[in-house]
Picture: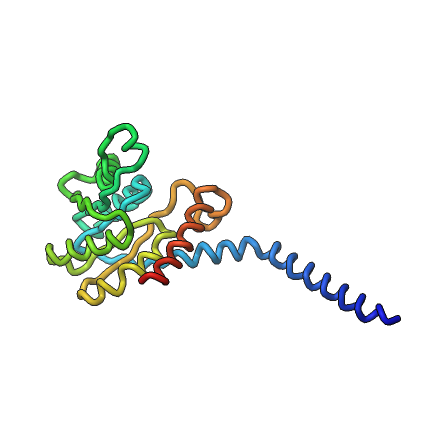
Length: 209
């Protein structure tokens, strides 16, 4: 008889654990969509003085930038990034990230006269500083900064305060991925890596900056 209360507590505990685990399983997709949505912080697009395309993932970002250019959001596209991808470097090809983005823009039929290079920056923070200096030197008052959609939350954190202090209107825009669906990012390895890396980097930015 003395063991009955203990057995009852044990059964209730097991039942609660089962309900909790079952709820997590049933809600796994909405929870993962919520995690992905937390990384997307885009602004409403406005006509601007220039569109800055951050380094990395040149095809998706150049494709979106070319679309914005044709839609009349800006007449100048600026490609950033000084790093040379390891694969190209191993073949002694000194092609920087900004050069790769320019090549893709040309493939998407953006006129070369509309493209400028800003071969500075190996990180989002460095590119932010380089873009801010470029805007000041060229008297730009309103710009669009373009990267991957899952990169936009960290961009807001890295860019917003500095540009507001400088009196430059900033619009953060994201390019849809061409290798995974943002609403089902967990279904592709590239999506899993992107979301994992972005949350780690976002945490690092919160701590560091």
